[in-house]
Image 1: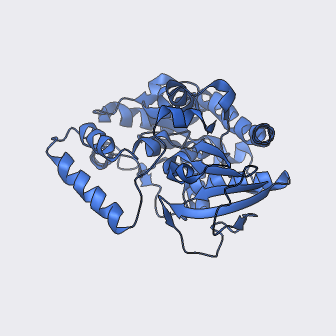
Image 2: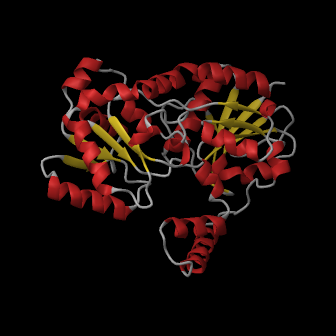
Image 3: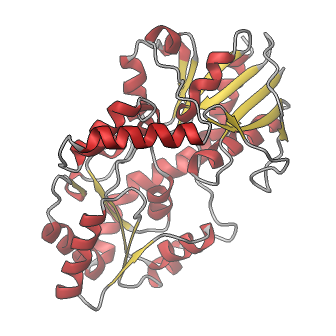
Amino acid sequence: MKVYIVCPYNKTGGPRSLHQLGNNLISKGLDVYMYYGDHGQKAKTSKILYDDSLAKIANKIEDKKNNVVITSEYDTGWLLKIKNAKRVIWWLSLTYYLNNDVLSAIKKYTLDRNQSSIYVPFRYFKRIVKDKLNGKSDRFINKDKDLQSIYHLYNCEYVRQYIVSRGVKSNNMQYLCGPIDLPEHKDSVRDILKNKKDIIVYNPAKMDKDTINNIQKYMNVHYPNYILKPLKNMTHNEVLNNLKAAKVYLDLGYFPGPERMPREAVIQYCNIITANRGSAANNIDIPIPQKYKFKIDPVNIEQLCELAIRMCDDFETYTSDYDRYRAKVKNQIARFDKDINEFCNNIKK
């Protein structure tokens, strides 16, 4: 049996999880190959994306009965070509799957920003032209009956509820969440707490720019001595070092899945403020008090900033509110191997 993992050639959270999966399957004695491609466009590379990956690179997928083909929800079109091998979707981000429906994604994008629908045709045409120029296919697994014939790995409750709504049965799915990478030399909790500074860090990747600007303006006027710092253009070690120093981590993104950065933040004993949407909306995926989850349309800038300042000034009073979330993240690391054992047993049936 050969296992093919289809993955875009791009170092982001999803590809990292796919390579972690590959390494673990190899440790179970399986023959694993990374197939690099993005929406029908095969990547031209002979170099593995991550240096610690143990998988081989495949130039083609052998569609045989005993083989397995795994894609993320981001790019399920490859599975439409598979007729004999077992097909698997690992759901890492529900939003990326929904964005495969270009027109619906653009309508939602425009609505979320309270913009006129007049922008929709222009944005739709621009996206279609861009994809055509890049040679990308718009095909993806969309029909309920097709989804029901595929084995599903879901990484959070938010995703599980969605695939259940599409008619996928419980015996055709299981939980599997890619763990975060912890630093090799972990500091003690005492040292982490002792070295915290009045720094509020945030992830700008999925946040609205106007909201970021309004937060920065409020902080500049009322709290100029506190540092508000974006986590961007950094190596993974730089991100971890900034989380280690910060007292507060702010993330008002759309939480399409469990998200790596807030999990890394809670392990580094940051007090966390999130948006109240996506996987952050429920108390299973992001188990922190609801009072730390903000409605964002529009967000109450003053209330949010004042909470962040209190979390800095009275830092250790708040840290116990995140013990449940910290325990969940540590459990994800501990159970990853066990969940993959279950997956191996299921795909061999």
